[in-house]
Amino acid sequence: FLPSRKLMEGKINSIPRFDYALLIRADIYPEYLIKIIRSKTEMFVAYQWDGLSKYPVIMNYIPYFDRFCIFDKDDIDCNCNYIPITNFYIKEGVPNNNGFKKTKILFFGGYYKSRREDLKRIKNYLNECQVDCDILLYSKMSIPSDIIALGIQRLDEPIQYADYLELASGYDVFVDITVEGHNGLSFRAFEALGMSKKLITTNSSIKEYDFYVEDNIFVVHSNNMDRLSSFLEKPYIPVADNIRKKYSISSWVNNILNVDTSKQ
Image 1 (cartoon, rainbow, N blue to C red):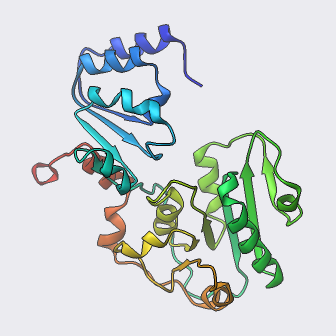
Image 2 (cartoon, rainbow, N blue to C red; image 1 turned 180 degrees about the vertical axis):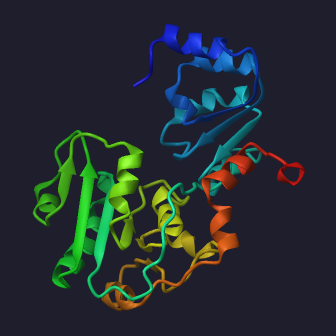
C-alpha cells in the first residue's frame, strides 16, 4: 500500500534537497516518484532484496540510480556494475549457552511451492523427535492440506516487522528455507546472527560467510537430517563482536550509501 500521489509529492517537495536517498524494492514505487527524488538527490541508491528475475520491472528503473545494490551475487552476471550487499539485522540478543534441552524452533515466511518439500521434510523430522516447531506461513491463497496436516499454521494477513522480531525473540532456533531462484542469504540468517540464535537452513552458500559456525548453523542436505537432533543439543557458540557488527543495520547503512566512516 502506498499513500496518494498528492501526499507523497507533498512530503518529498517539502525538503529542497537530499544528500542521500535510499529506496528498498524500488519497483514497488511509481516511476514519477522516482523521477522527482532523482531530481533532488546527490546520491540516489537502490537496494533490491529480491532476485532481479522475480520482479523484472526493476530493470527499467536502474538508470535513475547512482548505486544499484543487490543481495544475490548471481545477479552480477546481468551487469558487473551492480553492487552486491547482504541483508542485515536490527534486533540483538544474548546467546543461550546452556544447550537446547527444551528447544523452540520458528519458521516464519511466505508460502511458495518451491519451499513445500523442504518444509515437509524438516517439520516431519522435528515432529518425530518431539521438538517444538512453529511454522507460520503467510499466504493469501489456500495451502495444500498435506502441509496443514503437519501442524503448520497459515496466516492470511502479514504482520509488522517489529511484531515479528518480538515474536522471534522468544525462540531458540530459526528455520530458513530458500525460494527458487534466490541464492543470496535471506533476513533469517542475519536475524539469527543478531539475536544469537541457531539456524537451520537449506542455503548452502552460508558456509562462505565469515559468521558461519558449524555448531550454530545446520545446512540441510538430502541425507543429513539424522544429524539435526545432535546439532540442537549443542550450545550456541558466540560470534566475534567485530564480525557481528559488520552485519548490523548501522554498518549496513554506511556501506550501502558508501559513507566514509573514517571522517566521522
